Length: 102
Image (cartoon, rainbow, N blue to C red; front, side, top):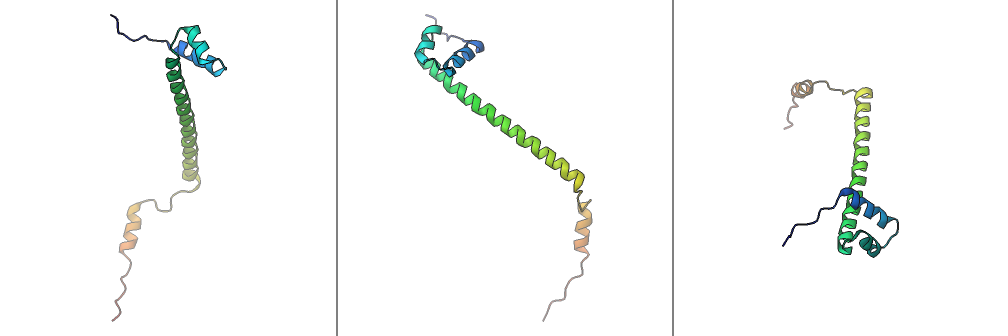
């Protein structure tokens, strides 16, 4: 008895999902490609999840690009006031101490 799972190509899955997106019913596509309707529903869930992930990746890529450009802008047009952190620390240490009131 062969219990190995069937392996379906990416092209087949994409063709099936496009047919479903075009308005064909699950039962029609299942008969046409000789697949289980439950399998098609599982593929459809994965297809939708992947689409959401690709959309999120695109959004995050755009945000990263914007932040990189903003950082570059501030580096060019707004140089830091303190070049070395050590200089700022020394200025704080050299301040005269106030006398305590009695």
